[in-house]
Length: 66
Ligand SMILES: [Zn+2]
Image (tube, rainbow, N blue to C red; front, side, top):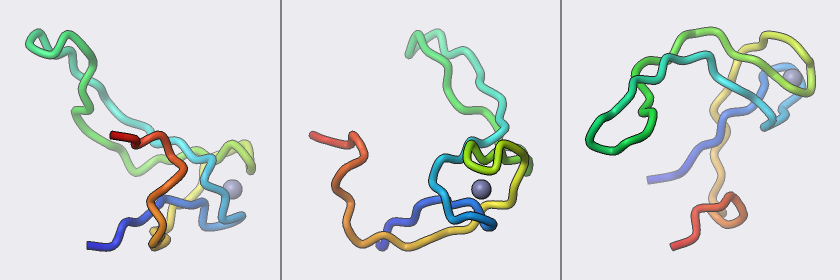
């Protein structure tokens, strides 16, 4: 299954954030993602933006080490 990354539809930056709710999990003792909104924010555009999916074949480089 190909991995995708979320990029800003305007500037193609990956410096994007998603507006979301987190819910406290007593079992995990951390905040877990509860729901995402449509609203997104691009750090490069410094404002709200639309996100696009971009396929990335190489999964290295984003802190997902075993
Ligand atoms: Zn942008």
